[in-house]
Image (cartoon, rainbow, N blue to C red; front, side, top):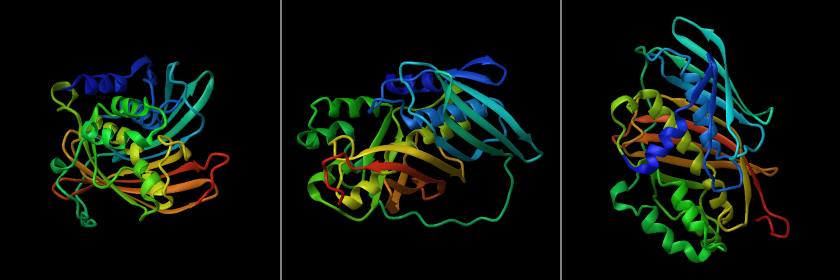
Length: 299
């Protein structure tokens, strides 16, 4: 296990301060606020700590209410909404400085047999043939106005090996608008084993990663490079995930993403996460703020 992954797992190992109250810390983000994927993953960890181990999460629905302060702890309060024979429902509120910054509802289910079908996995190259961040970022360093951006990108994603199938969104600032679709392969930079090899932790890690690139397809449609090149200001508004089939976050997963619409300063992203052998593991939908800074033309 890499040091970066070990640090991320420590971040998700919340402190229990009361029966249904947990405390988490943050780490520096790419933008001056707490990374949304971190808050979502930590909230799901808090909810999962109050649910029997044989009931993994099957869905979550969340709202980002306020920017998080990376320099202050986050307190997660879990409300035990329902404990049924097959399903368990939890509500989590994340609080900082006396105000809610995030709200999550999650549902958990005991495994059972049922009808089975899925969409086919779309074509994608072998992830091992694609450049990792260390190989890719120097190629685009000239696009960033701030020379610290490549280092911050590399550090923020050191725990996750994330590989773009095509060019990353910040290249769109030069190449121009393209089809609003994006694909990335990802897995943790290290193997989960021992006490940390738990189904819920794999789900929480996928939740963390799911917020990294989902709105990329919105940027591609307009030839925008995003915060890294300063031509878009954005933030997550809401986030929903459905966990269909078991998967491992430390094995290659294909994140196939698209944007059906953008309007009113908001953009919608839809994603499907497939295992390398073609099983549809997760579906994701997110809407986010996508604003063009003052003085730049909205294309």
